[in-house]
Amino acid sequence: MTTNSAAMHGLLMPVRWAGEGHLGFVVEDVAAAARNWAETAGVRRWFFRRIDTPCLFQGEKVRVTASNAFALLPDGSDTYVELVQPTGDGRFTATEWLKHHGPGLYHLGYRVADVLASVAVARRHGIEVDTIEDVAESGWAYLGSPERLGVHLEYVRADRSADLWTEMENAPDLLHPNARRQR
Image 1: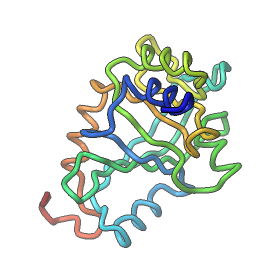
Image 2 (image 1 turned 90 degrees about the vertical axis):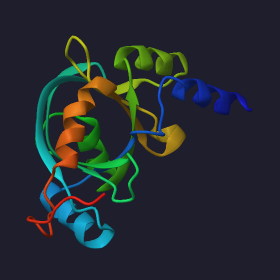
Image 3 (image 1 turned 120 degrees about the vertical axis):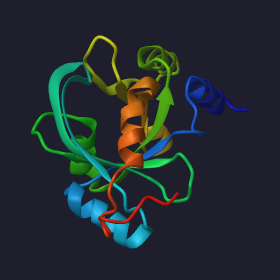
């Protein structure tokens, strides 16, 4: 194992992909992107939510606003897709990615028991926080890792996703709103 791969192995130790990870895509229009996913990839059950929360972006206090959509992949796995449409003019990882790279995959999401403890491990390996929710017990953080991995990493506190999971499970089918969930 090389030094860099050892560092990345240590960075990912507090997280796990198997079980409940997600792929985060930044988009210009969340409704249109969800419909595109439904029509082309069969990902049809989307839960939509607005985000408006105080954060720290590279150490600066900001307010992050976004329109998000979440959907489980139809393959029966616990992997889900998150679409993020930045809606504010404040600085935020998704806003910066969209401005510099355009729409597309910009983060891999991992569930963690403790965001702040996981961030501390990342910092020991030279990965700094890009954006973190600025509340007493942070629910999520983006790590500035594109130069190493090509995308950011997002840590999401596991206990905060239970409601999200229920919403995704019960979301209506965009193409057939009256259809029952089959999984």
